[in-house]
Amino acid sequence: KASGIYEEYLAYRDRYQEWRKGGALGAQGELTAEALEQQSVVDRGDPYRFEYWYPTASIFRMRFTLAYWISVMFLLGSIFFCLGSANKLLEAYGGRLVQVWPNLLGGVAYTVGCYLSYVQLINMPTRKAESLRLLCADWNKVSERVDVPSTIGTVAFLAGAILFQIACVADFADVPTNADLWIGVPNFVGSLLFTVGGVCEILLNRGLAAKRAARTGGDSNAGDDIAWLASWFTLVGSVCFVASAGSALYAPHWHHTLLIVPMGYFMGALLFGITAILLLLLWEANDFGLTLLNQLNHAIRAESVTAQARQYQGPKSRRSAGEQTKDSPKMSVRDVTFIAIYCWFIATALVACVVKDQWYKQGFYRSGLLLWTGLGMQVFVVIVAALPVFNRSP
Image (cartoon, rainbow, N blue to C red; front, side, top):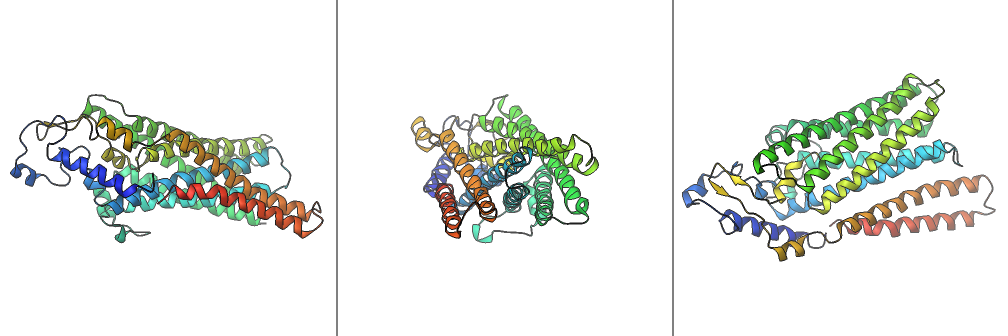
């Protein structure tokens, strides 16, 4: 998939150009040169606006890469958080270290994933990859292309992830004083911000689905269904985080808190992991907008749409049956399954390094050679598992 990204972009663009010229199925009405001149790039008569969202192959590649790593980072982070919470629930060997290390790594993965989502957002107006913005945005231009829930949701997720990271670092450092200030409050506020992001996803996907249903006469689309489902998993997972963080902050001495806190984080991370897998399915289908930038997804799709403004019907499909078979993702469910397995091996191998270090310190290893050979084996597993994940990205 990654190796042919430029060819895939050119194939989409060629079919799009053919459709705009009336060469695709079902063109009706007169498309004169004068009419074409009057069409602006944001013409409502073109329900897909492929060239508007993907003006160059480099932008197509950028959105492809960002969407992939957003999904992978959320999957990795979810696995780490699940491992940390499970270790606390089961009182696993290794004590705090096997709890705080996975949480720390999970916080890093979530922060990276949310930051990449932010980069995707602020570069919606970008026409060339060479002009990529990494931090500061032209919010006037962004607001012209992006709905308010998309902006609020993306920023809320990023702020929440940063607060989670602060809490994870403080917990890892085992701050002796003001634990509520450095751990409890950031976790709780971060969970609330994640909930805000989940609500924005629900509102955004419901709103776009309603608009699309009105435009197409109620036709359904698998991408819309997956995005809608992923939004709900995100929201419910965020509520689980809120329940856990709230219990730890406001009822630390309640006898059920010791069970509710790790269980809530485990369930929340598990639901976010399911969301990440659904995001990978969206990415496999070239829906690079995932759940917060759904307009990127609709720019790729092509179903029967009547353009009332210009009195002609868009293409039933921009692909012939042969092209659809050739260009569509091969074995996407299988591919996503393997990516999830690779991410699992990466996370567990890194946690195993912490366990082996504890074994050595507790005297289970009689020499440092056993420690370093054991660590070397785990690092080898990480590298072997990471190579297929990195090879998916151009």
